[in-house]
Image (cartoon, one colour):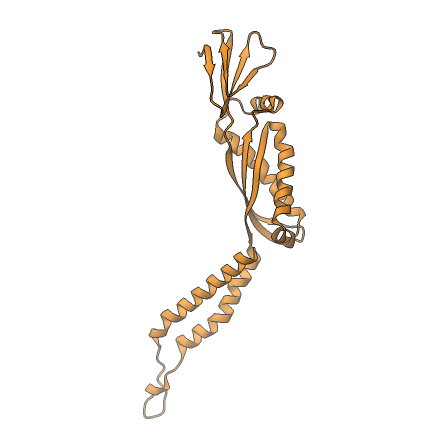
Length: 227
């Protein structure tokens, strides 16, 4: 059992409870005296935590499936006593991974809700508006848990239908050329009877395969630029 003078760094808070306190004594980044047997002290981390918020295949207001990835920075607020007390009630004794999981699930729900209320064009053209809405809605909910959303950034948007369309277009545009090159007939090597000898030009296979790969890469680059 820890007793006597107890200190903590600026990235954590002491929570002293027991005799002489009607509610826990909260000491963010400081020291406190703990009496043995009649008082106990616990610690809660105030470190900033990074979350990658994934929302795969969510339908927008127009019924278009898209996938969104956001990056959020969150932390337990140590400067506000009410929020710190709320965080202690919710998370004291839990590991950082458990706190991250609870926060991540909450952020995912709000991100999906905002995606469902906007069109694809709005999300693509106005990322700041999307990020702001997620930030505001999530902040108002997490504040009840004593958690502050430091920042939220929209990292990536993927339109699954557009990806499939671009891939199909690349195949339709480059595929016929590849098939023609692979199956063309070299009449220069025909027999005297005039019957053409069908020969496969293996020297052109690698070049045409690279052509197809380049076309697919350009399609993906176009999608990225549109995003």
